[in-house]
Image (cartoon, rainbow, N blue to C red):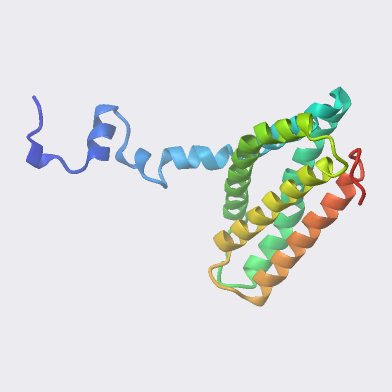
Length: 194
């Protein structure tokens, strides 16, 4: 027997009932959002590896392999190095997140970064294969640095509700760490001078 139209509460609840899923499954904080947060680290690794391999596409198999392991090292390794200071900085502010909650936030931001890098893989492959200037590798490294800086800013906004000395100090630390990782890892790339 069909429910009269006036008794329907919302389209998402009706769809959820029809699909036999709980109503909160379509809510942003529901089950699907939780799955996405838990897979953030996986998306980060896959997206970064794809971007790195695509960036080395025009320079042979060795460059593809080098890019496939260096890009995840840069993005995920940088996040792992910056997470303990982020936790300490959050304890000094009103954020006061649990370590588990903070790791979930970092995973969510990394998942978004992985999706961005996955989207940038096709342009990176195109530039790597067609751009034969001395600055081609530098352009790809700078694009990765820009994505990393945006990720740092995004994570700082998610964790810290207001600007404080601890939040600013962590942001500067994370950006300096990213720059240092960029200089260190880009020395391994052909055509990039640190």
